[in-house]
Amino acid sequence: MKVCLIVEGAYPYVTGGVSSWIQGLIKNMPDVEFVVQSIAASPDANQKFQYQIPSNVSEIQEVYLLDDDYVDGKTQKRITLTSEEFEAFQNLMFENNPNWDVIIRFFAEKEVSLNALLSGQDFFKMSLDYYNAHFQRVVFSDFLWTMRSLYLPLFTILKSRTEEADLYHSVSSGYAGIWGSMQKSLYKKPFLMTEHGLYTREREEEIIKANWVSGIYKDIWIDQFKKIGECCYQYADRVISLFENARRFQIELGCKKEKTLVIPNGVNYHRFENLPQKDASDPYINIGAVLRVTPIKDVKTMISAFALAKNHNSRLKLWIMGGMEEAEEYANECQAMVQDMGIKDLVFTGTIDVKEYIGKMDFMILTSISEGQPLSILEGFAAGKPYIATNVGNCKGLIEGEKDNYGQAGYIVPVMGVSEIARAILRLAEQTEERQKMGQAGYRRVIEHYNESEVFEEYLSLYKAMVSGKEAHIWQA
Image 1 (cartoon, helix red, strand yellow):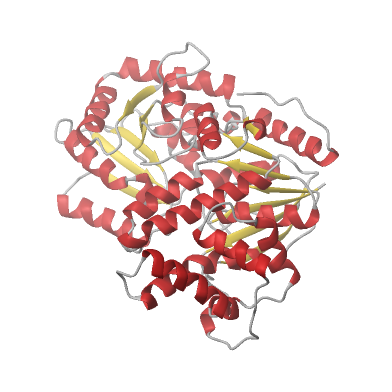
Image 2: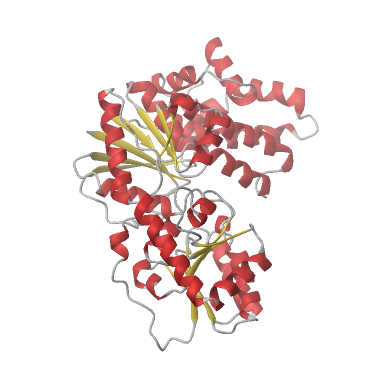
């Protein structure tokens, strides 16, 4: 069986929960041939594989969203759209219900220069018509360049190389889902999509807060990502979510209910046996945060809450464990914040082997503003550590339990709730017996409901069923 595994902004160049999940999926299916199709913003000569690529990965194909003929200004043959194509592109850009079959076929059957398409008369006319109806309060040249910037990444994906396979599996919607949708349409093979987070919602939140999108254009960007999400739901044969509330959101966003399925994340809890433990002479109460130092993890709130708690308990020590390369400017701001505030006993470790540190922690913390079902929490539970986590994604379900009566495995706190997070830190720090009880609750929960081998066996069964055209009995988490 040959599977195209399609990823955006992750494996194999970026560490994190989704990338670790991909590595585990591939390694747990040694008899499946994988072609990894990886999407990044632009080429980086310094980027390196962050994982040892398993032998059943036959190829890694790369697409760069901002690395096409359009950006170098070459003169290309003029492109004229048919009336059917014009209508499909116009609906894609400014109306509803675009005919994706026509758009996909356009890029598949023609030698398309994006420079010629985005600078051509048809694209100009569509943009001018919409500008005259809705945007005359801004300069037209700014509007036109915004439209070109908006559609360059999407069109780059649509004209990307394709690979014939038995199955296409994207690990998000968005551009990865578009690549999967396109290849499903061209080769008539099944397409599976797993959403670790809700891409459409995440992009909407990102755009609302973004400085790189002028306020007047935010609605157009948000609407475009909604259309992309709808396309992915339209073409996918199965759409996986990690927990029930996410599945309900997928249905609200336009996915047909009968396509949806819940398969949770899993963890190999055996990897967290016999970990190095805290030395009896260690005077600190160690708090661990396993994350990429990026804005979505809201490390600044974590730092502020730790500083507040540290003022009340000098024995606290925070270990922020994870890569700092993905958002260098933000990571530098976090380090400067620690220095400017004079916060003691806060360590940025960079990328490390989590198993070398996690056993020495007294408890763990995650202050993200958006999550799916964090693998870091499952790994913390596998190590017997309780968690403090913000009320996003499935964090509440993991910590408080959804299908068992093991009890709380930590505390849920509000997003950006500095004082509430600080109080939770102090409670866990001061209640040794309660801390141990919560750690055991998490450990029992992860063994019972989030066993990695069972999760990936479900995926393998689903792969086989989809390729053979047969229905599979899928375990519901």
